[in-house]
Amino acid sequence: MLDFMKQPKGFYKGVFTIMVPMILQNLITQSVAFADTFMVGMLGQDYLAAVTTGTTPFFIIMVLMMGIQSGAGILIAQYWGKGNQGAINRVLGVGLYFSFIFSFIGALVVFAFPRQILSLVINDARIVQLSIDYARIAGFAQMCSSISGIYIAAQRSMENTKLGFIVLTISAVFNLFGNWVLIFGNLGMPALGIKGAAIATLVSRILEILIVLVYALKNKRFKLQVRLVAMPGLIILQDYLKYSMPVIINEALWGFGAVIYPVILGHMHNSADILAAYTIAGNLERLFNVAVFAMGGTAAVIIGREIGAGRVSTVYGVGKSLIMLALLFGIVSGGLLLLASLTVLEPVIYPLFKLTPVAARAATTMLLILSFITVIRTLGFTMGIGILRGGGDVRVVMYVDIGTLYLIAMPAAALSALVFGAGIAVVYLCIALEDICKTGLLLIRFKSRKWINDVTREDIA
Figure: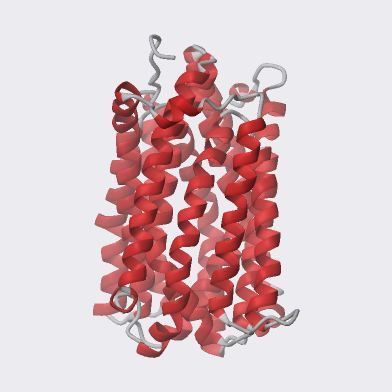
């Protein structure tokens, strides 16, 4: 039954060579994000809710950037398999243009109309007021991150995951130190509260750009050709739009839909408690699921490389092996999250954030549900974001992602919370319907083998 797990010598070593730096990168950045949340939590629960409110509008931009990076990664991974660095430079150039334009517009809109936008997230004027300064600065921090992120994503698609680990680790540690200085007023600096957290984030993102720029100019494995990056050409633009726009639209619509979740929670009874719990649960989930996200990214790189190198006949077997690995990682990740939820979180971790009893119970409820959903989510993430997108099957992934969110999970969550007045357990189970339905549909598509597509050109350099 497990014959498909037998792959050529060095295959699994290659998988873990790509995957381990991504796991370490995610682990460090999520640990620092958790510490960041802890520092803000020391200011009080209202400040936690304010940070969630201030970052929610940018979640749409963030997933849009992920779409731009993923779309570029589809082409780059396959061109890397072909050994065509000129085409990779052109794809990188298109991705940079898109990243800068979209992130700059997002930052500018929130900077100009913060109160109006943040009021859509939560119906508490006090929380909105606390979050305005944070949101205005956070937008430009994200703009900087989108610029460095597209180059890091390009290198990741070329099997160089160490760069992201190094750059984002340095940035995360610097961000954490900046938070300690500016939030609480250490080393003679003024205590700026959550505004200080936003400034520290902005400075750390500028540092990311500087590190990436120096690396790009000196890197010999992939030679940066500035002329091709600046003028990528219409042919690559057309290919990028063909294969990347469904991904960008997918992420934009999914991001907009996902933003509705905290909006729904923000209009429930005890909204400040629930939003604080949502922030804590989200940080803990990402911390325990670092291998989940790394598995999806690794699958996309490997599938794209195999197709680009012309090994189409073996791609399906490679995909099955990656799905089995995802299942194992999902079981371990979900088990660890369940164990933590039942033991140390409520008596040890929650008091550090000064959560009220209502918020603590809500956070535990969310995490218990997430611990069981993690296995399903891991399989879905690996098949959708990894295997199918890596194979160029971007439209089907878009339909599945958007359909399960807008037609199933979001309506169920909104009706249960705002019409029927259900508790957080029922509402969060409704949110989880997205992963359950999505994974089943993606598995059907994977078995059809229709996702295997070569998206490169032979006549471009």
